[in-house]
Amino acid sequence: MSQGRRYDWVDAAKGLSIILVVMMYAAYNVGKYTGGVGVLHYVIGFATPFRMPEFFLISGLFLSQVIEREWARYADRRVVHYLYFYAVWVTIDYVLKVGIAAHDIPGMLSGIAIAIVEPYGVLWFIYMLAVFSLVAKLAWQAKLPHWLVIVVAAALQMAQIQSPSYAVVQFCAYFVFFYIGYAGSPHVFRIVEAAALRPVLAWAGLALWALLEAFLVFWPDGHPAPMEMHMGLAAFPPLHLALAVLGAVALCTLGCLLMKLPYTGWLRWLGEHSLVVYLAFTLPMSAVRIIAQKTGILTGTSELSIAVLVMAVAAPVALYLLVKRFGVGEFLFERPAWAHIPGTPGSRAPKPAVAPAE
Image (cartoon, rainbow, N blue to C red; front, side, top):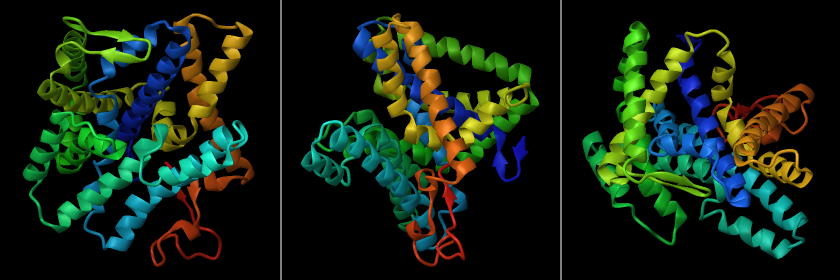
């Protein structure tokens, strides 16, 4: 089930997660301009309780292996690593969209400055991973028991706190899942390993979970809209929290079962490079939608959103492979030696050492 020091099912689950993340943005981006609801809106509606929690839970699964490291090594891998890619891609986005397209240099510089304290656009996920890793380390250093951190984090999540600060809102909404991934990783691994030994029973369990999930999300009045999802019973905060954790574990189990099937290696590869896709999917997503609509090639919400999804995933992969092939632009997906904390692995080498984005 493992390949080297990686777990295939973890990468497969991350692959499913990044597809769901891009799918949401693709569906809502298309829905915004067509005013319609397509098939992907229903898929995203079903996945609403667990779509982002699953990504954060998986990100915390291996935290226990590094959290006891000295601060410099830990911060380099778990904080600086994410902030580097966040800074690079925030700058690229503002330069292209504001500096070049809108010819607004002051607005570009102002936006980049604000992005230091307020997570920017879809890149908020990477920003918050750095914040979550920092808070988890502080909790470990303070010797706070797992149950206490989880209770407090769960209370913040269910409180649905609103704040002028987007960072505060996202921290309250998702830190609990990152920490559950860290504290509950032995249980997640045991569940997935049990599923691998009893695949028929595991598939049956996933089918029951899917029926329950769909019922609670869409009943009695749950329905997707062009730009959002209105949930049914699943909107009740304690139930939403429970469904998020259950769905995250279900997706991990699904990843394990899919790795037993032929022709699924691409999903594992995609999960291994999920951060590459996350960093670079927004520009091709918008470009494909604009071109398709202006040329009239695709007009229906369903077919257009599916095309946008496929290209938004494929374009970053193609860009990454070109960068690797020609060695130009490696800083987009690999962290150079100067971006490491001095004295940590990768910070000193005869030639620039890199830490891959994946």
